Length: 133
Image (cartoon, rainbow, N blue to C red; front, top):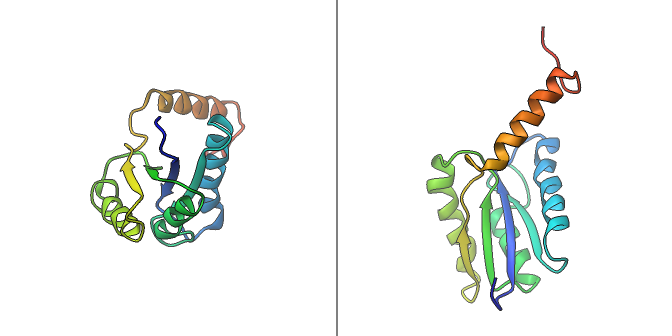
């Protein structure tokens, strides 16, 4: 990247179930392990749970981010990705006018998704996941 201090903000939908909300933190840990050791990686939930997008964005700025890459940790570019997240991220960024932001594409049809699907299906066949019928 450039001389800007770049942060990654992983944003999921959010859930009333704690274990669902913990998933994005697990992914953040995996991202932290794969990027530069000084890279800022934070999480946020769009709704229903803490930290909010405003809080997650502020955490990035507090750690020195001058640009935040907001990544929707979602599959499809539906209404949340196309409408809600841009509005919520812009509102969070408004409190930090010297910090720029960009919004990454959702996971979508990224080639890594195919590998994940194949792995999950193999796990199901091997009996390593929940069985039905």
